[in-house]
Amino acid sequence: MTQLFGFAALAIGGYWIARRVQKKMHEIDRRLSEKARDNPDTAPVNLVRDAETGRYKPTGR
Image (cartoon, rainbow, N blue to C red; front, side):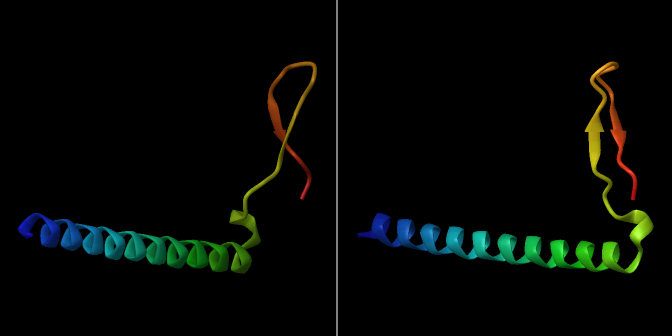
């Protein structure tokens, strides 16, 4: 019976940790999106592969 309580405690703890990590990831993603929206110079740039050289080049903004 003790193992069952231990397993239940670990399962609940693991679930709680997973939820906290997911919540923190969403918060960080939201912050980064806000920063990118406020400052378009730091926004990600799309890349296009040059067929001749095989290198990636940024597309025009």
